[in-house]
Length: 309
Ligand code: ZN
Image (cartoon, rainbow, N blue to C red; front, side, top):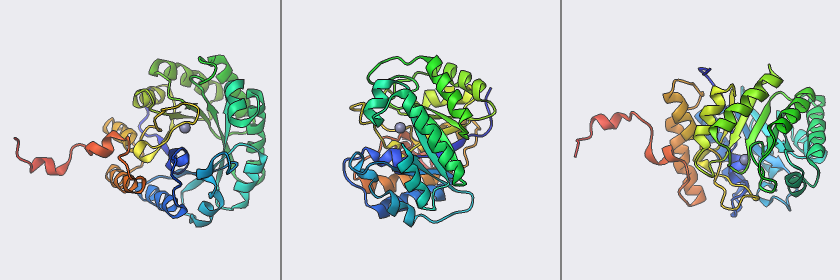
């Protein structure tokens, strides 16, 4: 069952930049956020409020929030792992939604957040409660929903059970994240359908990394199975510290190209995204993984004028 519109969440300022070894100046992050809005982004994960020693790239979370301007219809999302992070995000006065993360397996949860999987569900529930108390909304993402870098395959029943608890805790949506980029479209379709049914009418958001080239296929399968919100990162930046060599998020421009060509609207402007890709490549001083960023959209008006070889 295909919809005619999906909502995109732009995650480049957080997930995209988080694993870049060179520290990106705060002003460039603010530029990226402004350009994403100019492309049509309405929900943007702007930073994460984590221990700056663990993630130096996000040490300027407060400064980023100081620099962002409220824009009508735009929600700024801050990723938080615990009460301290939630309090920091709320104190900025700029964050409209807290993003909490629960991890599907104990080994990954211990490595990532120093707690069990169950502990990470409790922490996320507490974050959602803090968000609501402060007049914000809270959403939750289940990391490693499709596979764990330490424990391998992850039980679908476990993900379903976590999603139900997080939905009851008051999350406005549940995200299923393929943190290390191992998902395949059949698995995605099955799990998205099960979770969508279980948490209905709450929507399912999906978050894919293109580590093994299945990112776009997974997005397509997820939407067919009922997902209505897709995380993506301009240029396809990003990685995962627990998956050496892991590629970035699915690229916003690649997802937008695929969906708009399939008559599923995203609210984003492809030409502007491609311009933003080129600008970001200059900031990062490297070519970015996005395919459409390199090839351009289609049809292109200048093609008509070009002579065949
Ligand atoms: Zn990610």
